[in-house]
Length: 142
Image (cartoon, rainbow, N blue to C red):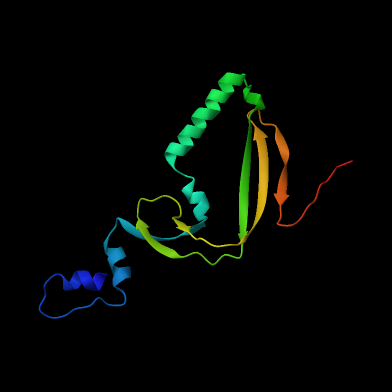
C-alpha cells in the first residue's frame, strides 16, 4: 500500500519503501503506536451492539419494578473462559491514545474451560464453579 501511495506522487523515478518503513513511520507519528492484540470470539463480538445492551438493561429495570424484586435478591454471575488451543497474540498498529490491548477477532473452534463466580448486591458470595468439556463433578449431593 505504501508503494502505491508513493507511486501516485508523480515522481519521475520509480521508488519503493524500505524494509524499515513501517517502523520508522510509526516512530515519526506520535499519534500511532504498536500494541499486542487480544483474541476475541467473533460470536461474542457480534453481541456487543450498544442498542441491544441498552434494551436489555431497560427490560431488567422494568422487570425489577414490575415484580418488586429486592436488590439483595439480585446476583451478578461472572463467567471467565480460558481458551485452549489458540495461536499466539499479534503485534498491531493502533492509535496512541487507545487504552488496553486491541481485540483480534479470531474465528475457529477450540476448547474452553469456564470459571463462574457469583455475588449478590449485599456481598454474599457463592462458591465458584469450574466447567470442563465432557466432565461432570457434583460435590455434596445426597
